[in-house]
Amino acid sequence: MTKFPTHNKKLSDWVNKMARFCEPDEIIWIDGSLNQKKQLEEEAIASGELIPLNQEKSPGCFLHRTAIDDVARTEHLTFICTKRKQEAGPTNNWMSPRAAYAKANKYFKGAMRGRNMYVIPYSMGPVGSTFSKIGVELTDSRYVVLNMMIMTRVGEKVLRQLEIEDNFTKCLHSKADLDINKRLILHFPEDNTIWSVGSGYGGNVLLGKKCLSLRIASFLARKEHWLAEHMLIMGIEKPNGQVQYLAAAFPSACGKTNLAMLVPPEGLKVKGYRIWTVGDDISWMRIDTDGSLWAINPETGFFGVAPGTNSKTNPNMVETIKKNTIYTNVLLKNDNTVWWEGADGDIPAGGIDWQGRPWKPGQVDVNGKPVLAAHPNSRFTAPIVNCPSASFRLEQHHGVPISAIIFGGKRGHLAPLVYESFNWQHGVFVGATMGSELTAAQVGKVGVVRRDPMAMLPFCGYNMAEYFRHWLNMGKKMPKAPKIFSVNWFRVDPHGKFLWPGFGENLRVLEWILDRCENKIGATETPIGYIPNLNDIDLTGIKLAENALEKLFKIDKEAWVEELKGVKAFFQKFKGDLPKELWQEYQDLLLRLKQQNG
Ligand code: GTP
Ligand code: SPV
Ligand code: MN
Image (cartoon, rainbow, N blue to C red; front, side):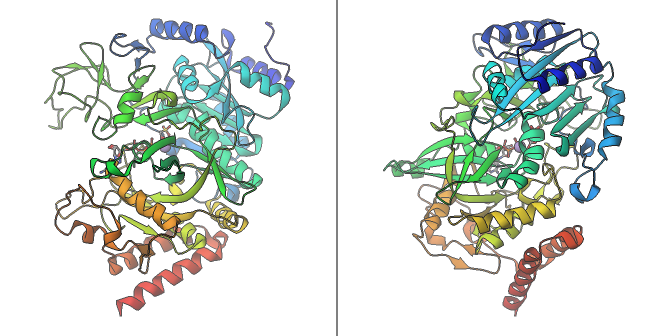
């Protein structure tokens, strides 16, 4: 047996045990060096896992295609495996650890034959920070290794840290046969273990992301009194140099990445704001000695949605993905660069589509539907340091102080452009009752509204009723709690046209939020919360449709009463576990809506 580069016996014993189980040809430890990365890229090219792109136009960039039934997270195959079902709660799929291990055992047994097992020691968060957690992922996929190298801190320095601290999340992944019928994404929070088999898609296999940083971390966060959330983190710097930070939770494919790196719109340029991107997907937050909430982004890269990304919607991202980026499921153009629906430039004359078939614009399938060049959930993996707006505090062990928490979703109707909660408890209710239309990031019917509390429905590693209680408790522990807001960029007119232009223009809404945090301006009280006095939103240089602003802030009380029926049904799922404070908020809101209805 070759000698392992660690003295951590728990680690070497586990690697040995898993290797005997999965039977790889070789065990290869990822040291994080450039040489090893180059070698892996070459091997991945030889094996067909990666296609090198035009190295002059896209240096360090590659394309990867997944299996066609392996293009998004598979929530129905994702399980929380706790001893008691109650612990997973009514919103998670549950399996007993014994049943789950037994089932997955069959799929993992010998699954790595003819392949290598890569050992990836990684840190979520700066190595050694009190915020950070270490994971070790074993995988037979070079694509996974190369993605993890972008998304997390990997290698030698993490192994050194594992000489000091013993604890790490044991993450096992095998592509196996990429068979959807033998695919499982299993979380064992009580064992600090994740097993993923039969998939090669991002959120299912980059186990530091949703699996560790949200499902396992949320479980740990409750025990350790902090928050692990599906949130972007951004800083807004004023000309006087003061930077205020916001954290915002929107469900998958609802605009976190775009907001996190927005470019101030033309009309606000004179105000001299500068935006700093801390993170676009995950926020770990702790109460610091100053009594306020501080946050880090545990990741080091973006795994972003490609379609719709262009120099108008997200110029910072266009810059970010010019080099050292892995593209997944997009169109390969004839000049060996990539394209997707809503990308910059002309629609290409042809290329190879995400499924590896020849593609031409205007092509339709047997049902007469346009054939997409890129999958709607096609993505890119790019290092955060490429981003022109990358925050200068990414490596800070203490993170950044959060002034406001924002919840949002995709709602064509009902939810106003922005409103402020009355207080922390009401804010938790606002987060807990969030609804959003399904997008291509989940397997399911696009457009259907589902309740997605705090954008964590698919990511909470324990009973959501307890999660709400944890949120309520965190508020009580925090002398300087952030204010909580709700936003909705997606309200439409009767013709289905967006009432709000979104993207960079969203800064106008953030400006109002920050002014409210600093108690600079008043607001109008409505049954659901405070909405802006319309004059307080700076509309310099923007043209909205007639009465658009009024429509964006219209509170349709009857529709809200109707909405509350869905909320009630959702709350009832938790039976006696739901904190009574949330039922109280529900009753109070209902009363306010009915009172004002007269
Ligand atoms: P995940 O990576 O899945 O967690 O998604 P995300 O929340 O980071 O979403 P992202 O920023 O990638 O946006 C997804 C889609 O929403 C893209 O198609 C965007 O073009 C669109 N989008 C983002 N911001 C806005 C906005 O302000 N208005 C409108 N109308 N669309 C937006
Ligand atoms: C999401 O779906 O929320 C993502 C992409 O950020 S994935 O990593 O696949 O979960
Ligand atoms: Mn996400």
